[in-house]
Image (cartoon, rainbow, N blue to C red):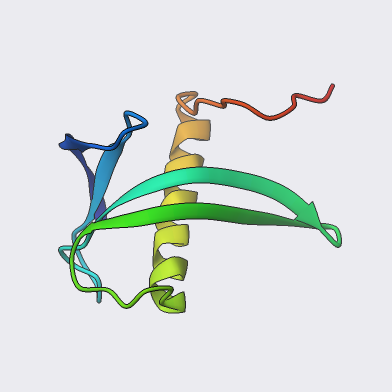
Length: 94
């Protein structure tokens, strides 16, 4: 598996950390923060915050941000498929 949840590293919001298990960022551990989905010019966009817990990563590295974004999309997709995705905050428009 490309990543795994690290349950014994929890941030102040109570979220577990994620460890990257392969690829150029193998061994990096990070926390995801606020995640936002929004629409811009008819396209869905994803914005998120993250904090590196362990590992040598350049600040604001666009390749790292894309890698974490891809992992986040996997987590969201898996959560939707398994009906385990939790939505909190925002506005639920009907």
